[in-house]
Length: 224
Ligand SMILES: O=C(O)CCC(=O)C(=O)O
Ligand SMILES: [Fe+2]
Image (cartoon, rainbow, N blue to C red; front, top):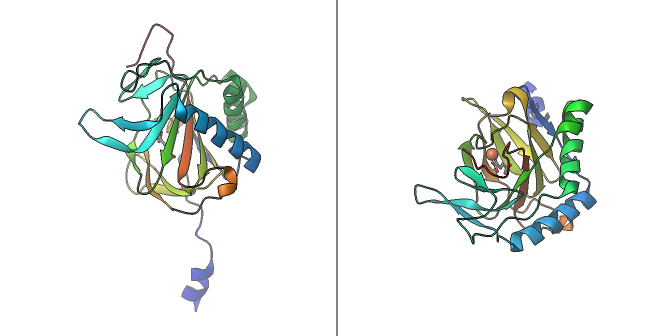
C-alpha cells in the first residue's frame, strides 16, 4: 500500500550544486515569442545557423548561431571563419538587460546583476535526435555566470562533475544560471522530449537554447 501511495507522489526536486539556479517558467510567453523571432533573424545571417564542425572531424548534432562573438571549438572570434568569414550580429542592449534581470532573479544581488555585461550568445537549436554531450563552458576568459534560456520542447539537462549526475527537466520559458562554484561545472543535454513544446512560442518544433556569456575578450584578442 505504501508503495502504491509513494508512486503517486511527485518526485522530489533534485538538489542543484551551489551557484546553479533553476527558475521554471521565468520567461512569459510573449517574451519567448520575441526571442524566437530574434533567433530566427540571427539564424539567417550575417552568419547562417549551422552544425559546428569539431576538430576530430565530427559535427555537433545541434545547429548553432552566435551573437556578439562567434564560437567555434574552442575559441571566440568576431568573424565566423569556419562558416562564411563574416562578422557575427551585434549583441543587442536588450539582451544585456535580459541577462541582468535573469541574474537579479537568480541570485538577488543587485550590484552583481547591474555589473553583468554579457557580450556573446550561443543559440542552439535541437531537432529530432539532437543532443549535447557533457562539457564545460570554459572558452571564456571570465568567471561571470552563464545565463541559459530554453524555449520549445522540454529537455533533460544534466549537471555534475561526477556521477551521480543531477538531471533536471528544462521546459519552455525556464531560466537556468550557472555561476559561482558551478560556473565551470560539467553539463549536457542527453535527451529532448520531442513534441512537448507549445507552438504558440512561434517555434513549430524542437528546442531552442540561448546562453549568454561574458567572453572577457577585448576587440584585439581571441580566446584561448
Ligand atoms: O542546451 C542547453 O541547455 C545547454 C547548451 C550548452 O551547454 C551550451 O551551449 O554550451
Ligand atoms: Fe554548455
